[in-house]
Image (cartoon, rainbow, N blue to C red; front, side, top):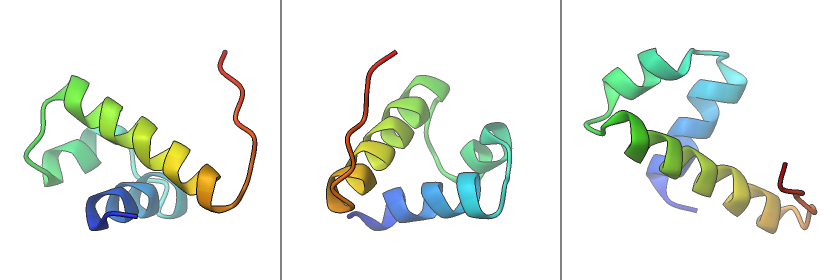
Length: 55
């Protein structure tokens, strides 16, 4: 898992920081941030061998 993915997962889910605040800490636009966050969650789920359903 990339360092950026780990950073986003820690800030959003462990530190319970809002997406806007996390996004301001990294140099990405809103859409890019959301794609990276989604990819990070899917990457973590794959490592933990979890099944993720699309809504």
